[in-house]
Length: 327
Image 1 (spheres, rainbow, N blue to C red):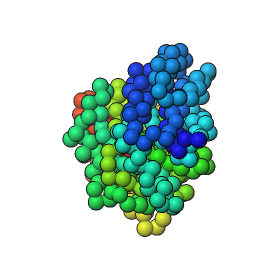
Image 2 (cartoon, helix red, strand yellow):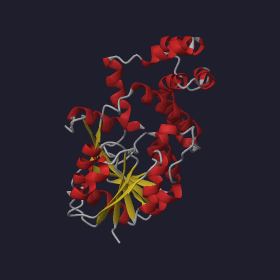
Image 3 (cartoon, rainbow, N blue to C red):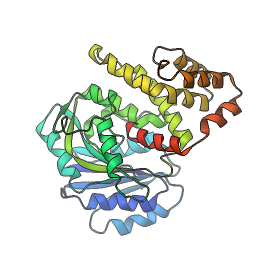
Image 4 (cartoon, rainbow, N blue to C red):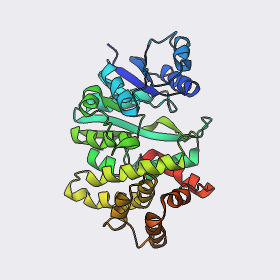
């Protein structure tokens, strides 16, 4: 049996998937398998697989009809034969030493259920964005002073340190946790998984860059990102944080609240939007003008509020990119 299963859910992106798979084949640690679960409605990805698997067997499943994000990932967790697994999105890619860096702390520390590393931020064409990558890692606590040691997992998820992919997890822990397909979780199922995984053990941060998170045209969808962050707000709010981490939880909720209100309004969840606006976590002192505008939008016709919220300026697009690795 392979030691590591690299699990790649994919949907209609064969060109980017090829790059992801090639980054797996280039690993310095070679005791692994690649498992791909494909939700694409066409056969372009299926036709690509034989050419990729000449030197490394790839187990490939084509789901017709598609399973959806959560069930697609869960299928991969169940198909994985390795003791450890890496979840890799089809538009992201690994650094050559990723597996060797991520497996060491799991082997050495029985209390650790998942390991993660620094991430690069990459443009749509795959170019590494050095400045943006440094800012992202600093923003989400992937820094040298925290590196190469065990992270308190509860703190890690509240600080948004744990990434949506590019981490390694014990396969048994992944199966015990699984993704939830609930409507309230929605597109935030990656983050929801990490919050529930944190209850099973510690995390470990290695000091090297292990993966690149690609900002694709789909990634910066204004509407989708706002809805996702709205769902994330309620996941963070419902998390049973330890008493000494309540202040961190509140800080995260205050950061998410303004965007979460917009996400709620986009899905016509006005009661939830008003609940955030009148709740204890909305940062009125820092966002008074925005809060007043959002309050007005909560009572405006739905078509008007959606039109205003979905207006996507260059400044907003830049801000969206900075959010991407926090979800």
